[in-house]
Length: 575
Ligand code: AMP
Image 1: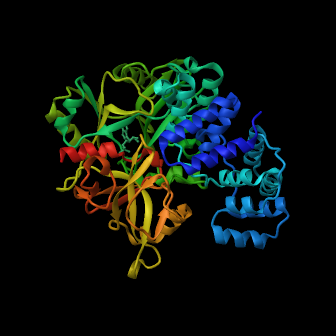
Image 2: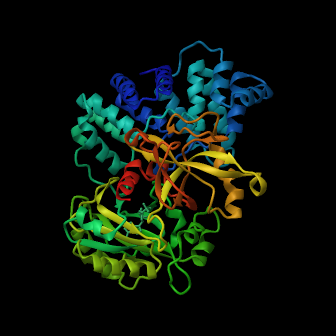
Image 3: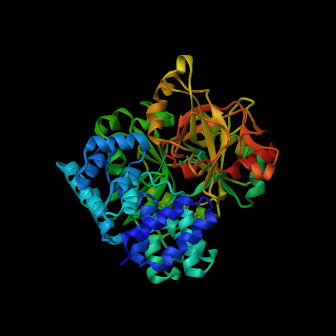
């Protein structure tokens, strides 16, 4: 049984390094020493979680409560703690400073069990219970333990080790190199649970994770699409026939139909079942033993016309769910089937999956108002005229464009490959596509914008290095209301110094943790001496977006799902 101190020391070491390769080595050395159970815990705590996202288990500890817990656990005056917090801006440091305990007591397992108890305390009186439980842990902590314990519970660890860093380290432990990474990554894409992957790999070996099948009730990381600027590029990337399908402007939903229960998962694996009672009751009518479907939920108006994403977002709420399900009706446009009656279909080609999907939907649900097949047509990948026509039709009915899918492709969980291609278009002479960027900094406004930010520094993601590179500054496209809301959306991610995940050379008034994703559009890509996207490769400067404009927030995307530097490089080359 390993001491919690060792985990705290690991966190300290990771905190000090910004090199991903070094982080992999540090993590691998640690994983070699610990048990599978401890490996699982390490994975969760590194992610700042205590369970995979889909379980929705959260600690629910706000700063105020942690301050009270510290006061109770350390028998210190609350004012003193608040004062120290004001000075340092980090309750982890405050705890470290105030703790006198020198007795090594806590084990990794014990700390995790207690954190789970904190998360599971819900309902009446739970805040007090959480406070007491945390106070007991604090009392037993060494200074270094308390520092990382507090940061863990507040979600402010910011070590910079990504899920992929962890999987590399795991591969190193199991195969001595990065050889096992592919298997591990696939397992992670299917299980969506880093802790469970670590546990299985460390206890049963990597072979146990080979060709893992999806399971009903556990969200599969969703397959992603590449993008093209012109239709003629499609045939260069896909040789087989393609399905040209409407790209609906809604929310991607994976529906798990179990023997008894139905679950709906978002792209970020949140369990959103409760938000769509109208869809759940309709899904119950599908005549299968079990299945996993994928599609887009779209809002419609009284006449059945498709409504934009923003309208659907009003259905994301805690209260008045039934009222809003009547006020904003939806349609679920299903486009994939990855599991049916006890069998995985992820290795089956898309045309087979579509066939089965049509079979199960045509049985009973032919007339369903709420569940429809996504509209598509099968064409040759070089039939540019037909694709163009389908694209125009898609736009006419309220789609964002089209998705072009290789008819022979398997379902590659979590992967963005040239099997699915998205094609969106703006009719103006501007840059064709939009970018999902991560907000990393803010510049205070003046005049009308005095109480908010005048512009935001935004970045693209590099999954290989797990870093965010500055791409442009966005000040246009916001409505007055958007502007007013900026501090409310962003200020909780304010940090004192630039995050070590961020590569930026511009000065800003405020740095943010790279958390919030928004969609922007611009005129063209250019080389800029101040931005850092692919600066190493291009030398003269980094790739930057000119005349950017805010389009909308992308709450459905996690920062690691933002547009990548490689995607932008492709667009830049073509330009
Ligand atoms: P983007 O969010 O622009 O990267 O585009 C990918 C998203 O388009 C997916 O995650 C889906 O939410 C959405 N989408 C809409 N229609 C389809 C479709 N027919 N097939 C696949 N994805 C679709």
